[in-house]
Each structure stands twice: as structure tokens, then as C-alpha cells.
Length: 256
Length: 243
Image (cartoon, rainbow over all chains, first blue to last red; front, side, top):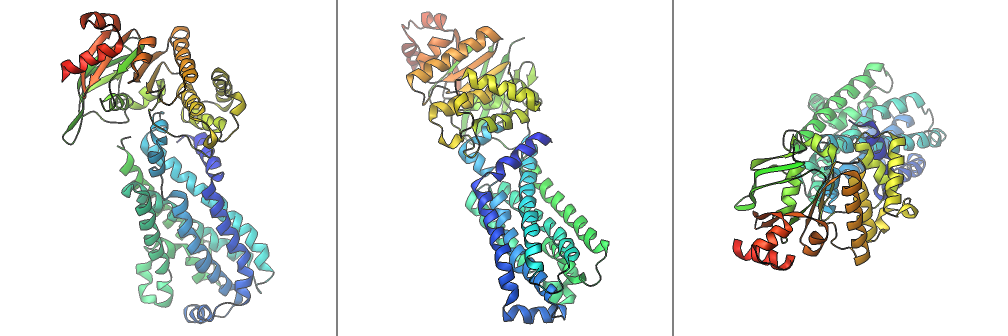
């Protein structure tokens, strides 16, 4: 992997219009959060009581932030950042120029996917650094450490959204269809993410849902240990590696 | 050793033989014309030479490297300008050239020096920091050529490089290619259906018709053999004979 190429690709992607759109989505989530937390919807409050047996305002905020904001945003951002990977380059004729260089299609796919993950990380971390001080003032009992620990794990779910979108893109090779399929799969995984919380019998099944892994710290807010953070990160790293490897395998004999 | 050596190269798409048993060779340092009508198989042949498309059968070697097994080494030593392409609209010319240079592992300082000299060579220094999305066809073609030369290639493969250029741009491009060949010893495989460009630039040619090689050799010899006064007559004669 060429580190400088990766760095230049990240810089170039940060300057793209789609990244500005993604940054706008993140900014909207940050700005709306204090308003939403001040007067949460009734159904959210009742769901929270049922799932977590608490009315702790911090847990309420963490749930709203993780599920209502970040889960939805990473679904969209994953598709925006990687949903047309290699398809767009192929449609515009850029791929023939780029793959005529000493870079294999698999390496190019990996570099572009990792670059999209890096852009996701920049946007995600930026949003959290902006949100923390803003929300800390309006949420009683705000716990900075737990907030960042929880979202550090969730960041790897965001990477999964990017990696999955990249994989679907090279599997389907049609821009609109690939985006739609990624969006549907990710929405389904987000929809099922909390299944283990409201029905403990399904907890083991949800283990295989990367979004569930990403929100797992929510179940350990009061007894958080390093293992609660590191274990899901390790699982998500494994899943993301497998997803990217499948994508690289798919494109290794790509013809231009 | 030939710069490019093609032996019974074939590519089949379903029932279509896009390239059908083509064999020819290109000598080091020459500007070699590769002619044929649109869809004759020129682009597929060029892409096979770079390992971008796999041959169905036959083989090809570029600077001694097998184009299938050693395609990365081939690409390291070649420059390529496709017939139809776009450059990333959100990047500036300089950013894009650095991006391409990074694919060759060029050090940033060496890349900047190389980019600067290419920008100067093609007279686009003043536009170097403008977004590529706003470039005209001629300017895009110059950046396209600059990216093909960023690695100081020993072989340049150009697919219809003069299409879309105005007469001045076309003249400048042909001059650049002559300089590349005469001053730096670069081998140029010049693929085009514009026969006057080939006649202006090349001494030897290969002609494709419906995927098959219909002629290979010095232009003057081919003209004599086919009793043709100019390239148009020569090509028509070759095409009619093949049909």
C-alpha cells in the first residue's frame, strides 16, 4: 500500500462536494442535539425505560445520539463515501488512467476504501469533538469518558458502513442499484441493532450484527470496563477486514 | 530486444473476436503508427499491452516483460493516454499529477520537480492550481499527456491522442511526441484513425481491420506495394482487400 497515495486520496476526497454534504449532515446532528435532548419524543422515553430500566438523562442522550443521529448518519455517509467506488471512475473513464499505473485493482480498491474510512473518521471525530462541549452543558450528569468510549466503538460501525458500501459497489457495479442495496442492508442492520436490548433471548443472534457491536457500550454505561470497548472494536475490525478482503478478491481480475 | 512484441494476440468477447491473432513488433525509440477504423481492435490491443484487459490467447511482451504475468512492471515503465477519459473534476492539475506520481512511489520533492517541468513543457503552468473540472478539451489533453509522462516512461501508448484537439493543439502534440522520441529515446505507440497524423509522425505502421492485422511495415513500402499515393488510398486498399 502506498501511504502517500492514500494520504493524497484522503485530502482529495475531503475536498469533494459529497464530503461537504456529509459534513453538513454531521453539523446538523450536532446542532439539533441540545434541542432534541431538552424535549425528547414520548416514544423514545418509553422505549428507553423498557430497554434500559432507567430515566438517566445521560443514557437518554447517549441513546438518542447513537441511534437516532449517528446510526442513521453512518448509513447515509457510508453510501455517500463509498457507494459508487470504482463505478464512478469507470463511468467517467478515470479508471483506465489510474489503473494504467503500477497499482493492482485490488490495491486501488483497498486504498480508496481505506481513504473513505479515513474521511468518515475525520467527519465523525470532528462531530463528536464539537458535540461534547455543546451537549455537556444541557445534559445533567454528562460523562465525557463514557461518551467518547461508546462512540469510539461506534466509529468502527461507521467504518463497517463504508466497507460494506464499497463491497456492494464492486459486487453490483451499477451506481444507483449498489447505493440502494447498501442503504437497504445498512438500514436493516440499524433497525435490528437494538433487538438484543429489548429481547435478551436474541442477544446472541445480534452478536453478528456489526451495528449492534457498535452500540454495545450502551449496555455497560454504569459498569464500563476496557473489555467492553476493546472486544467489540476487535470484532468490528475483524468483520471490516473480511468485508474489504471480499471486495479486493472481487476486483482482483477487474478489466478496464 | 524489441520494445513491444505481440504474438498472435487474441481477445474474444462472446462471439466477437475484438482482436484476432495479431502479431507485430515495435523497435525501441521509434514512433509507431497503429491505425484502423473505430472498433478495429486498437484500444483492446493497447489495453492488453498494459494488462488492463486479459488476452484470450496469444502473448505480448513490453520491454521484455510478459503483459499478463508482469503487468505491474510493464505499467511502471509505460505511460498511457486512453482515447476517452475524464480527470477528477474536484482536483487541480497539480494535485492530480501529485496523485499519479504517488502511484509510482515518486518522492514528493522529485514529483514536484517533475510536475513543474511537465507543466512548463505543455505550457499549462498558469492553470496548474485550477480545478480540472473547468479545463477545456485541449487543456485536459495536456494534463492527460503530462500524467502519461510523469514516470519518465520508456514507452508511451497513446490512444487517439489528437481526437478533439484543434489544429494548433494537434500540431503542438505531434511536436511534443517527436521531441520525446528524438531527444529522450522514448518509444511511442501512436494509435489513431486519423491517417494524416500517422503519416506525419510515423515511419512504420500496423493496420487493423475488424480485429485482424492487415498490414505491418514501413509506410513507404506499404504504399508502394499497394500502389497508393497517400495514406487514405493505402488504408482503403487494405480494408477492401481484407473484406
